[in-house]
Length: 437
Ligand code: 4AD
Ligand code: MG
Image 1 (cartoon, helix red, strand yellow):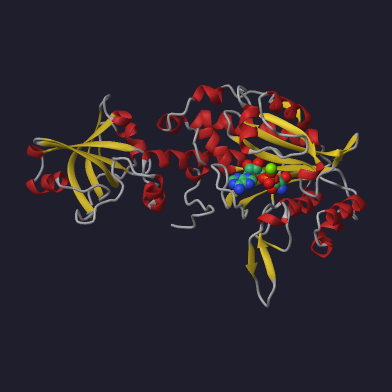
Image 2 (image 1 turned 135 degrees about the vertical axis):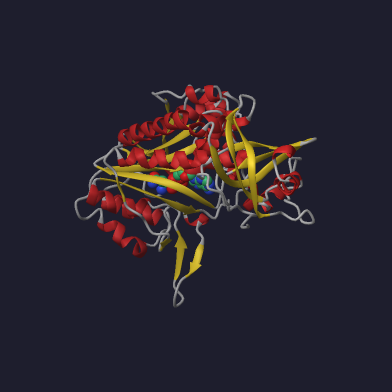
């Protein structure tokens, strides 16, 4: 629309003193007599523009003066350093072209005033434009990229695992059933782990990274019915190897965020010192020790019970770094966990609990590699052997000790961003009572 080069707001510093074009949306507008200050957003930042009546054609000035929130527009003007402006630069408007003007009869529904969470969730498709949601999505992207970079640079091969699966991995109570063809039933995946185990016997170290589904009837701040999980799996690996990789991964992700996403953490008012305090080694304890600590802190938990959300919060209270709890009672864990050879009533599983009460972000451990024991466990868990025939083959043809874990992206992002609830960590959350927009 003008001869000036199109730049993004993030690039403004490199164009100080130049006339450029910026394409975006009207974030906010301040009027002050013969000057209006439209604040533009373009996905990369905010830019305060300055439109002076005497310097513009009457029509352009009036159009800007009466512009409605979230109207789309392209402005041309000169970039000028201005310490007081958000981002440190302003744009002196020379031209403005409106792409679509929001009708004031049907104004943008999200205004600077407070809205309830249900209203915001119903308008999630628009709410994403807010500064806070923008910042969270940027952190999420960086977390995912860091996870991939970690595994890609540590000898892991990405192997995508199926979403339609014939069997349960994490227990039958949280399976979503889907009608497949000709009366066949399949389930949405709860975890790619079983397939990862096959991949690891081919490639040594693999990971899968994709959406995961749990028909969790729990309405908590930590549960989604659809979430993203990264799952590494390693052949010839023990519980200790699993714990080392989990610790390295978490350190890698937190460091990367501190390196690249400080500005977003400021928008989120995150206490960054809490993230800076995350150091190796993480605190390590057994389930037995954890139960003792919890009882001392007043929890009613008894040996043999799974931790509730409050137990996880209580346990991590006062710890500046994540906590790794291992050797859980076999009865509360999935069928595939290797028993502790010194104490078969507990299994070689580990949970990593985030500090500040964010709860479990990682679960994993060492898998059963003995065929007979695995068969016994399938029966104990009332799982149909036929559905696991292929999985059992892995124990017949060169079975080796192996292990891995799963890290939930949303739990991880909630912790890093310091969010109350996981619903804000994914663009379109799926929860017990929410499947729209
Ligand atoms: O502990 P989980 O259930 O472990 C597994 O699925 C293993 N098969 C993983 C493996 O060893 N390959 O889930 C792993 C992580 C949890 O620690 C949590 O971060 C996340 O996945 N998670 C959820 N996140 C959001 N909503 C839910 N309903 C979640 N359930 C698990
Ligand atoms: Mg778990």
